Amino acid sequence: VSGQPSDLRVRKLRPDDAASVVRLLHQLGYATDEVEVRHRIKSWARDERATALGASVDGRVVACAAVYVVPFFERPGSRARLVALVVDAGYRQRGIGRMLVDRAREFASRRGAVEIEVTSRRTRADAHRFYTDLGFADVSGRSRRYIAEL
Ligand SMILES: CC(C)(COP(=O)(O)OP(=O)(O)OC[C@H]1O[C@@H](n2cnc3c(N)ncnc32)[C@H](O)[C@@H]1OP(=O)(O)O)[C@@H](O)C(=O)NCCC(=O)NCCS
Image 1 (cartoon, rainbow, N blue to C red):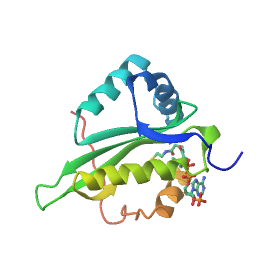
Image 2 (image 1 turned 60 degrees about the vertical axis):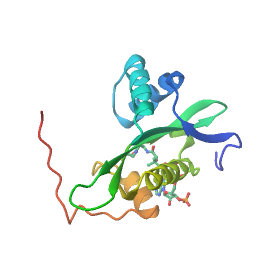
Image 3 (image 1 turned 90 degrees about the horizontal axis):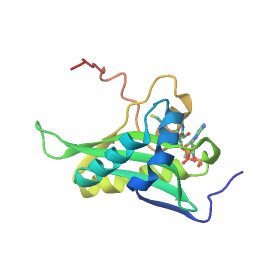
Protein backbone atom coordinates (compact mmCIF):
# COMPACT_ATOMS: atom_id res chain seq x y z
CA VAL A 1 0.00 0.00 0.00
CA SER A 2 1.34 3.46 -0.74
CA GLY A 3 0.13 7.03 -1.05
CA GLN A 4 -1.89 9.05 1.41
CA PRO A 5 -5.42 7.85 2.18
CA SER A 6 -7.84 10.33 0.57
CA ASP A 7 -9.80 10.94 3.76
CA LEU A 8 -6.78 11.63 5.93
CA ARG A 9 -7.26 14.42 8.48
CA VAL A 10 -5.11 15.83 11.25
CA ARG A 11 -7.09 17.12 14.23
CA LYS A 12 -6.94 17.38 18.02
CA LEU A 13 -7.44 14.08 19.80
CA ARG A 14 -10.84 13.64 21.41
CA PRO A 15 -11.70 11.52 24.47
CA ASP A 16 -13.49 9.05 22.17
CA ASP A 17 -10.19 8.34 20.39
CA ALA A 18 -8.83 6.71 23.55
CA ALA A 19 -9.17 3.10 22.34
CA SER A 20 -7.26 3.84 19.11
CA VAL A 21 -4.60 5.75 21.02
CA VAL A 22 -4.14 2.82 23.45
CA ARG A 23 -3.36 0.60 20.44
CA LEU A 24 -0.91 3.14 19.05
CA LEU A 25 0.90 3.59 22.38
CA HIS A 26 1.14 -0.18 22.60
CA GLN A 27 2.98 -0.17 19.24
CA LEU A 28 5.33 2.39 20.73
CA GLY A 29 6.00 -0.01 23.60
CA TYR A 30 3.78 1.44 26.32
CA ALA A 31 1.02 -0.51 28.03
CA THR A 32 -1.78 1.79 29.12
CA ASP A 33 -5.55 1.59 29.41
CA GLU A 34 -8.43 3.44 27.86
CA VAL A 35 -9.59 5.21 31.03
CA GLU A 36 -6.12 6.58 31.64
CA VAL A 37 -5.68 7.74 28.04
CA ARG A 38 -9.13 9.34 27.96
CA HIS A 39 -8.21 11.29 31.09
CA ARG A 40 -4.87 12.34 29.57
CA ILE A 41 -6.48 13.51 26.31
CA LYS A 42 -8.84 15.71 28.36
CA SER A 43 -6.13 17.20 30.54
CA TRP A 44 -3.87 17.96 27.53
CA ALA A 45 -6.85 19.68 25.86
CA ARG A 46 -7.21 22.02 28.85
CA ASP A 47 -3.55 23.03 28.79
CA GLU A 48 -2.83 25.90 26.43
CA ARG A 49 0.86 25.03 26.25
CA ALA A 50 0.04 21.58 24.95
CA THR A 51 -1.71 19.81 22.15
CA ALA A 52 -2.33 16.14 21.44
CA LEU A 53 -2.95 15.50 17.75
CA GLY A 54 -4.32 12.56 15.83
CA ALA A 55 -4.37 11.66 12.15
CA SER A 56 -7.62 9.95 11.24
CA VAL A 57 -8.66 7.82 8.29
CA ASP A 58 -12.41 7.20 8.00
CA GLY A 59 -12.76 8.80 11.43
CA ARG A 60 -10.42 6.29 13.08
CA VAL A 61 -7.18 7.58 14.55
CA VAL A 62 -4.18 5.82 12.92
CA ALA A 63 -1.40 8.04 14.24
CA CYS A 64 -0.81 10.43 17.11
CA ALA A 65 1.69 12.96 18.38
CA ALA A 66 1.72 15.32 21.32
CA VAL A 67 3.69 18.51 21.81
CA TYR A 68 4.39 20.58 24.90
CA VAL A 69 5.86 24.08 24.95
CA VAL A 70 8.35 24.74 27.78
CA PRO A 71 9.49 28.35 28.35
CA PHE A 72 13.19 29.08 28.79
CA PHE A 73 14.12 31.01 31.92
CA GLU A 74 17.67 31.83 30.89
CA ARG A 75 16.68 33.42 27.58
CA PRO A 76 13.56 34.58 25.76
CA GLY A 77 11.24 32.17 24.04
CA SER A 78 10.37 28.53 24.55
CA ARG A 79 11.33 25.12 23.29
CA ALA A 80 8.70 22.63 22.24
CA ARG A 81 8.99 18.98 23.13
CA LEU A 82 7.50 16.37 20.85
CA VAL A 83 6.29 13.19 22.57
CA ALA A 84 4.36 10.02 21.77
CA LEU A 85 4.71 10.15 18.00
CA VAL A 86 3.55 6.91 16.44
CA VAL A 87 1.95 5.91 13.16
CA ASP A 88 0.06 2.61 12.97
CA ALA A 89 2.30 -0.06 11.39
CA GLY A 90 -0.14 -0.44 8.46
CA TYR A 91 0.06 3.28 7.60
CA ARG A 92 3.76 4.07 7.79
CA GLN A 93 5.85 5.67 5.04
CA ARG A 94 2.89 7.45 3.52
CA GLY A 95 3.64 10.93 4.82
CA ILE A 96 1.44 10.78 7.91
CA GLY A 97 4.29 11.17 10.42
CA ARG A 98 5.56 14.17 8.48
CA MET A 99 2.08 15.76 8.50
CA LEU A 100 1.75 15.33 12.26
CA VAL A 101 5.18 16.81 12.94
CA ASP A 102 4.40 19.76 10.62
CA ARG A 103 1.22 20.45 12.59
CA ALA A 104 3.04 20.09 15.90
CA ARG A 105 5.65 22.59 14.65
CA GLU A 106 2.95 25.06 13.61
CA PHE A 107 1.30 24.81 17.03
CA ALA A 108 4.64 25.30 18.79
CA SER A 109 5.57 28.36 16.69
CA ARG A 110 2.21 29.95 17.40
CA ARG A 111 2.91 29.47 21.13
CA GLY A 112 6.27 31.23 20.85
CA ALA A 113 8.60 28.24 20.63
CA VAL A 114 11.84 28.89 18.75
CA GLU A 115 12.83 25.23 18.45
CA ILE A 116 11.42 21.76 18.87
CA GLU A 117 13.13 18.72 20.38
CA VAL A 118 12.46 15.02 20.56
CA THR A 119 14.29 12.23 22.30
CA SER A 120 14.37 8.84 20.67
CA ARG A 121 15.79 5.54 21.92
CA ARG A 122 19.01 4.50 20.23
CA THR A 123 17.30 1.35 18.95
CA ARG A 124 14.70 3.25 16.88
CA ALA A 125 16.82 3.52 13.73
CA ASP A 126 13.84 4.19 11.41
CA ALA A 127 12.69 7.05 13.60
CA HIS A 128 16.19 8.57 13.55
CA ARG A 129 16.21 8.65 9.74
CA PHE A 130 12.74 10.14 9.83
CA TYR A 131 13.81 12.97 12.17
CA THR A 132 16.96 13.84 10.24
CA ASP A 133 14.98 13.83 6.98
CA LEU A 134 12.57 16.29 8.61
CA GLY A 135 15.42 18.66 9.51
CA PHE A 136 16.08 17.68 13.11
CA ALA A 137 19.78 17.66 14.05
CA ASP A 138 21.21 14.92 16.26
CA VAL A 139 22.65 16.84 19.23
CA SER A 140 23.46 13.81 21.37
CA GLY A 141 27.18 14.57 20.97
CA ARG A 142 26.59 18.06 22.36
CA SER A 143 24.54 17.33 25.45
CA ARG A 144 24.06 14.31 27.67
CA ARG A 145 20.71 13.33 29.04
CA TYR A 146 20.31 12.68 32.77
CA ILE A 147 17.22 11.42 34.56
CA ALA A 148 16.56 10.98 38.27
CA GLU A 149 13.50 9.33 39.72
CA LEU A 150 11.20 11.39 41.96
C1 LIG B 1 8.88 7.13 12.86
C2 LIG B 1 7.44 7.21 12.30
C3 LIG B 1 6.60 8.07 13.23
C4 LIG B 1 7.50 7.84 10.90
O1 LIG B 1 6.18 8.03 10.43
P1 LIG B 1 5.79 7.76 8.89
O2 LIG B 1 4.40 8.22 8.70
O3 LIG B 1 6.10 6.36 8.58
O4 LIG B 1 6.83 8.71 8.14
P2 LIG B 1 6.59 9.55 6.78
O5 LIG B 1 5.94 8.66 5.79
O6 LIG B 1 5.91 10.83 7.09
O7 LIG B 1 8.10 9.79 6.35
C5 LIG B 1 8.68 11.05 6.19
C6 LIG B 1 10.13 10.86 5.78
O8 LIG B 1 10.87 10.19 6.80
C7 LIG B 1 11.75 9.21 6.21
N1 LIG B 1 11.36 7.87 6.68
C8 LIG B 1 10.20 7.50 7.26
N2 LIG B 1 10.23 6.20 7.59
C9 LIG B 1 11.44 5.75 7.22
C10 LIG B 1 12.07 4.48 7.29
N3 LIG B 1 11.44 3.41 7.84
N4 LIG B 1 13.32 4.35 6.81
C11 LIG B 1 13.95 5.41 6.25
N5 LIG B 1 13.40 6.65 6.15
C12 LIG B 1 12.17 6.80 6.63
C13 LIG B 1 11.61 9.36 4.72
O9 LIG B 1 12.59 10.27 4.28
C14 LIG B 1 10.27 10.00 4.56
O10 LIG B 1 10.22 10.86 3.45
P3 LIG B 1 9.65 10.35 2.04
O11 LIG B 1 8.24 9.91 2.33
O12 LIG B 1 9.74 11.56 1.20
O13 LIG B 1 10.52 9.21 1.65
C15 LIG B 1 6.83 5.79 12.15
O14 LIG B 1 7.70 4.98 11.42
C16 LIG B 1 6.55 5.08 13.48
O15 LIG B 1 5.48 5.26 14.07
N6 LIG B 1 7.50 4.27 13.97
C17 LIG B 1 7.32 3.48 15.17
C18 LIG B 1 7.24 4.34 16.41
C19 LIG B 1 8.41 5.28 16.59
O16 LIG B 1 9.57 4.88 16.45
N7 LIG B 1 8.11 6.55 16.93
C20 LIG B 1 9.10 7.55 17.21
C21 LIG B 1 9.43 7.50 18.65
S1 LIG B 1 10.72 8.64 19.11
